[in-house]
Image (cartoon, rainbow, N blue to C red; front, side):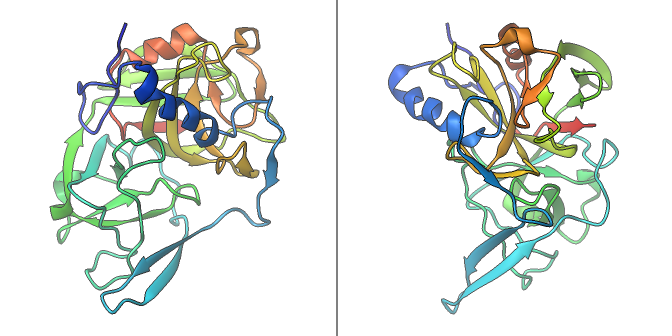
Amino acid sequence: MSRRRPTATARRPRLARRPLALAVVGLLAVGLLGSCTGERPSLGAAKAGGPTTTTTSTTAAGKASTTTTTPGPKALGPDDLLGYIATPTGNPVVRAEPRDDALPISIDPKTEAGAPTTFAIIGDATAVTDGWYQVLLPTRPNAARAWVPAASVTVTKTPFRIFVDLAGRSLRVEKDAAPVFTADTAIGTTENPTPVGATYVTELIDNVDPDGSYGPYAFGLALHSDTLSEFGGGDGQVGIHGTNQPQKIGQAVSHGCVRLKNADVEGLVDLDLPLGVPVFIT
């Protein structure tokens, strides 16, 4: 059986489970979503004061410039991420401010799993100002944002949004503000909690070992652990995935990821959610 993988626009084909092609994707799932399971011992403590990300780019003169991205002044919510998705038409062009001469921020054109890079647009994309969109970045720190030229991206809009209720141990998907999917979840522990805030889906991994810790599928998020800067070879990226311990659904047992029963993560995949779909964790 094959399934279709979310991409920048809804209803594009996902990768089918082919042993050779997906062996790489399956191996990457462990590192990409490495803050999720409780079986892997390679934990790294985050730096005091919260994680930051330094990005390096090269200017026209050949000199390297660096910048440290920082979260914006206002926490984002459903009124900010309206479902507009920006997909670069080439290598991502990202600036710290909405000016051509502003400091560039280096973002790879693909994720580690090989999915095309996407950005969640902040605000109403139909009201673009001076040719720029403000976007949420997929990098540390969580909720970091920057600007992309409108001419450098293709914009689509999804009617879907995902809501994770940590206290209620539940996940809900809405389409045009109407619930279309619900599931029970397991979440992070007190020591390694699931981060809260607005984020978005960056990739969907079709695992070659559907009976393993991550289940058949893992959705990567533009979100990272607040307590783990490294785990299992990855950088503490948080995701939504299946599990081989369904009896722990409803508990706080992960290193930050949101776990679903395998049947539920398959149901989530069947919704054909696009990359860039907003996710709100509260």
